[in-house]
Image (cartoon, rainbow, N blue to C red; front, side):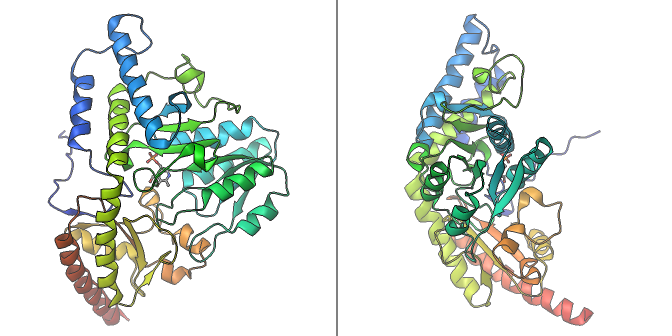
Length: 389
Ligand code: PLP
């Protein structure tokens, strides 16, 4: 049996909200932890101690990138795990009551909230407006019901819309609820400051910021109670047992440091690419979502009428461009994006949605070529559907 290998990078990759290529400096920092004999960080001998030191250094790097203290960083294996830990663990420390999540959360927030219903919690959604922003008046009303936890993402993975999270956190706290935010898409793309946002917990993930897959963190205000998700040897202060993935954590730490130090440059470059893209698309008369609110600079989410997003994604892939339709993390589903439906977009428009998400490594020439290919593919697909009609 032969092993399959990663796709060679001869295609143009415009799907950085799904995952990013690992930075070569990050890979170089990780390799010694994969190649050389290294100890278990819980061991007392020198091998164990050096592994522990590497983890603690990464913890400081992650904390600094997030505006938090090192002792607030709990390493997990994925953003999904951090979100499950937050929702299940924080709600379980409170009397059974309401869990409120925004209607545009990633399934790794909404599904654990729904799972808590079996323990007697109720799970309700906070509506968003047509730009994908939380309706603060509705939130205020919903908070009249006793609430264990509010969870609202800082930036949306599909539209890139950025929430007024400090205001949302204030409302939650004023009504006695805990407040968690999924900042997986925000870190490295906008300034993220856990303390200034006034959060009790926040999730971040390495592979969205040119770090390796397999490392993420829940940033946690240690003054609150949280139930562990994994019980065992007591790692991560007893909150997340399991031998740490040292190489991935080391890579995550450096990726955080690099992402934050490059933030200004990243925003300028990706914003220019997005403007170029959207100016080019304007000739095609498309719906661009969340374009009248604060958005991640790298993200453009738009829909072509009468063409399935999925069909367009496959056609563009054949032409050498990797883009996403709806959310790549739940691409097994052919349902229209729940984010767009929550924003009041009609299902037949939402079905045509395509997301382009840049990194600072993409170029203006790639965008110009893409626009030509995109326009051409659209006219071909429209001709095909006219013939089939
Ligand atoms: N939250 C958001 C907003 C995401 O976009 C994703 C992944 O796309 C996740 C959470 C899950 O993170 P991970 O892939 O690290 O499990």
